[in-house]
Image 1 (cartoon, helix red, strand yellow):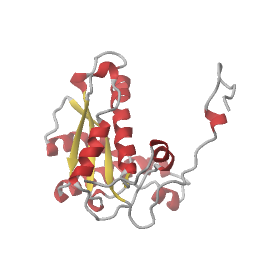
Image 2 (cartoon, helix red, strand yellow):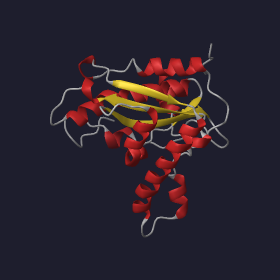
Image 3 (tube, helix red, strand yellow):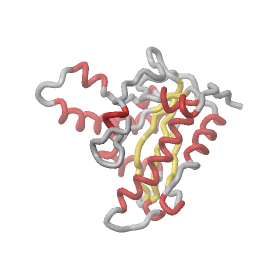
Image 4 (cartoon, helix red, strand yellow):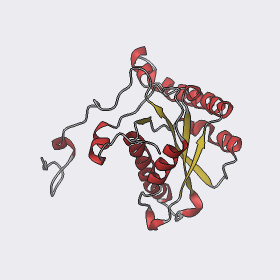
Length: 208
């Protein structure tokens, strides 16, 4: 059995952060099952549970998805960096190279399992992202790092074809997962004080 860090839920919430560098140490199968079971405990609209997860470990698939992902990242960050952004800032925002990650998990949502309508995209997101957060919190509790990423959108059709994902299924995010690499750590991420983001009774009236 995989041994957890003994971390409480509140501690996992406090120390969770995006991890960019990963160790090559393999992730045990029972840890993956634990993490995915945690994901499926999330709430969803009308309890439709539209989430689907694709675990990818194959080096060739990771490399190909990584190439497409890196291209999407260059397109997005290249547009943002025009003009004045320093190189150091661009490197800090650089997405992980999937070839260097033990595994990636595609967090998907079955569009046929959610209600159609003018707000269907919002409803699908509201139903799948809690599952992704559960997944990442469970990983943190097991000492595993994650990072939610979405630059795959430029090549989503190619990724679907590569992995046999049906057309009716959207890839909401890709989560690289593994043990923390050199220089990485949990915790230490700055957060805005509660007084700035939480209000009581009316906007602007601080709850803190």
